[in-house]
Length: 218
Image 1 (tube, one colour):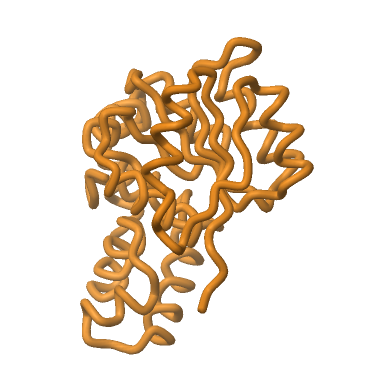
Image 2 (tube, helix red, strand yellow):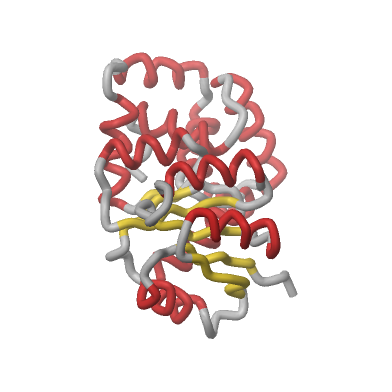
């Protein structure tokens, strides 16, 4: 049996932290290892507990959650970040992508959406709730003709484009293979070819390019 995903909850409101803990408690694939109410406390907790995922509020009393996300990426690369906020402003979303957050959800997302997002971010996918993805698409495309991004995909084969779409929406190699009727190893080969042809190094970068090109909406 796989080890549970170790989660740190960071929010300055106790009632929100309690609610998030309740969403995860009772599910054997999660364990909440700590809570924090400030950015400084979050960084200290990550150093002590080494969580897999930090569920991080954008607005914290001492520092911006986006600044904390950047600090986590630099100091604790083993901890991935899922931003959670009442705000879905395009600038916040764009900044979250820039600092390396693995996902961004609004606080009115359903408990199931939150759990699925944590699982997806843990396996290396990028996750943006539907309302957020629209802002992300706008922010990423701002000042850049969409045709430039779409043209970059012309070098891909039809099968590679299918793999790009599925991987960028968060599916694992196994899940994408089942959807396409091919083996996970074949999906991995296509995935590596896509990354090489497009000149990107990670699924997060691949997801951004797919959104810019209009392949996915998030």
